[in-house]
Image (cartoon, rainbow, N blue to C red; front, side):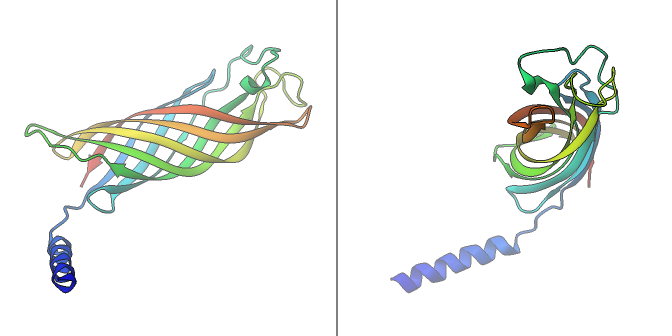
Length: 192
């Protein structure tokens, strides 16, 4: 009986292995909104399907606008002095299966991964801080997030949200903080 079940399971696996999987690669680009006083930037990346349920997204965002003068005021909450400016990431995603409508296609993905972020320390008492002259340091980051994708033919729109966890240190007090900031992307994409 066990042999029969194993032969049946092998047959099912080989039938699915032979099934055609439509390639699904996307290049996406758009606006990025990062938690902080100078939030607007650009985001871009490449998303590729690895299987029916798994996709890999590689990308990054940049916030080129300067943090406004007066954004970093003396405050007892030193955690607010650290602003995520830029980041790169690699995030595998799990596609949530669902029925597709006929007029358009949509996907929902849950993602978890990692990357690096560039964090600005806007603490007013720090050496070198004058108006908008802040220093940026790099930190490893853990990232959780999700995507909602709507596609019409080979083009579409994508909304992504990420929670970025990283560690930052105050220079003046040698005090470390574990912080979580948000990053949102509003993008267009081309799929082939």
